[in-house]
Length: 221
Length: 141
Image 1 (tube, rainbow over the protein chains, first blue to last red):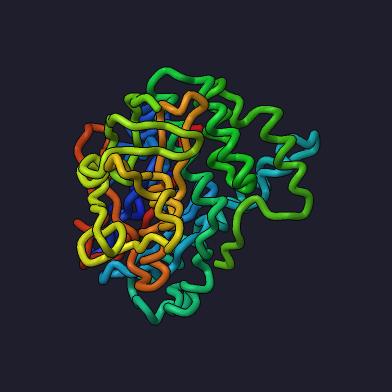
Image 2: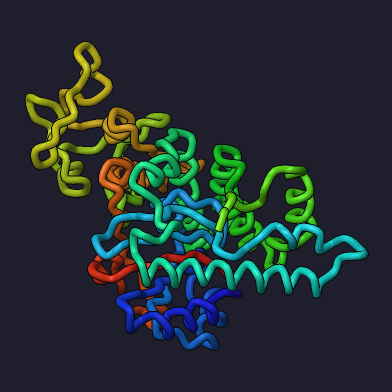
């Protein structure tokens, strides 16, 4: 879990006019997110988003998803997966090298945090702070199916929170059908159905079904 | 058609209202529409502030009835906003991002939001204007 990394980055860079805001996409609210937040003892805003509203607003389909926002409140990077990578996908193979995965993860993390430090230092001169044209290219257009998917997902989280689990799953099924590429919809729905299912056989079967397609959008950092 | 009480998740609130449900259409009284979403039916169509959504000529019956009720679903469709409901049609949800995302594509301004932390204290993105912000999602699952 990345919360301690984000908290450390915030502690380091807060004096440079920088803030980290972390948002838990958790329909289970504080009951689900709290056990991770408490030990991280965040002093940055560490928020809980029970309806995945931020993912909807920023058109994010997976966690982690990250946006960089400048001092004027403008997006300069709309959506990247931070230091998450594809290496976890071999984890169920018998000869999987965990040490190599951890080393790869460490490299990704150092590179990503270095890019954030460069942006905090140099602002628009940082090569990872995109131009308005580049940001617009990366912001997907409005899609009516995706809007319906988002509405069904909100409906599902509401129904779940009001004790209507079966009706919630029916709404999640609609959201997933309208936007099958959303891992947030799939994994949140699995988790609400049964704790552990979001990382169970169904998840791994869907990861395998990706074939050569990426799990995360390309970060190119 | 009988009135039933339904729950509507609007862009930023949860409201209970009296409505007539007909398939995917949702008829409410005109004052109710104004109360919950701010839209008022005028000669120029549905208006909120300076923005008006005209009713296409010849399709008036989809939007308004002589008994004073208006079709919230037709207004949403005309705005390009999704509106969905559960199987029993007692809970309805509007998508909460179409307007904000459309605006962000033009201005590149980061859409604002307000959410609680673990202690229940509310935080908004706009409170951090003047600083660089790294906004990161994660999940327990």
